[in-house]
Length: 62
Image 1 (cartoon, rainbow, N blue to C red):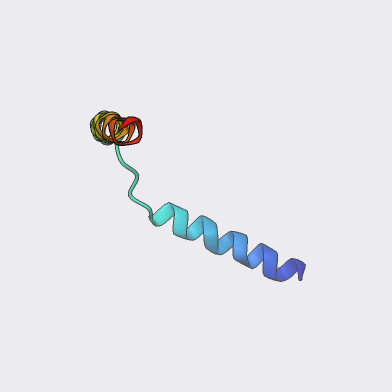
Image 2: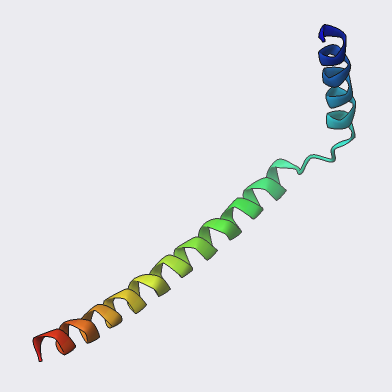
């Protein structure tokens, strides 16, 4: 069991060394894209929710 764990961890280390990690600039750029898209979607859903709430409110109140 212990031999298998050691072999697994060795394989993980080899695979991690093969990874091409993004530069700091690329990571920050990708993060900014995600944040902007999430903000835009949140605003869109907030507007749609408000509109639908007003419609439902007007239907219920008659």
